[in-house]
Image (cartoon, rainbow, N blue to C red; front, side, top):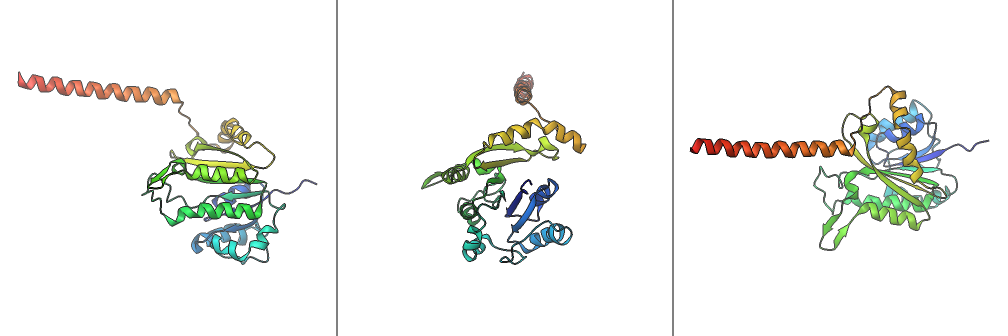
Length: 249
């Protein structure tokens, strides 16, 4: 009998990632989310409406802060070792987003360390880590530069995982905006690079199956557009100079 694929969703939000895993046939063990409203939405859709999560007896079915959960349930989490296929999720992205203030001292950034601590306790076979593109961009201060993506990769490598990551543009999979995301996959005993290869190979079939249009603009097209914009800019400057010279004649 094939072993059921199971997972834990941390920093789960309202359950978007859990919904995808549910639709893919995975079995949820439990989810960790601090925000009460977000957890209420997850609970309604994936616990009350459908019995998706098994949920352990030692964990109350409510919103939890991950640091408190770790400190109070270290032994329970260690007992899960060897029984968890996947831990999925991503710490809050606001402190890393290029659209935000990118404050290196944002307390939410420290939750990356909580993520790693959770992984060390549970030791899943597979990890999926998601965040914004800015997660790969250095923070610079008096102490030097810090890149959180490198910190995560190094920490997981030290725990015996093979690690790979990619910046995925979600518009390539039907999302109606150029939404780039840092996706990291870590595995024990398998090469995670294959995950991204399969993702690229199956993209067209996925879009066709879902009946959505997925566009990919090749790098050459981007370069052509940039050259055209540059040409227009030069023409505009020359026209302005010509007009100015004509007025002075």
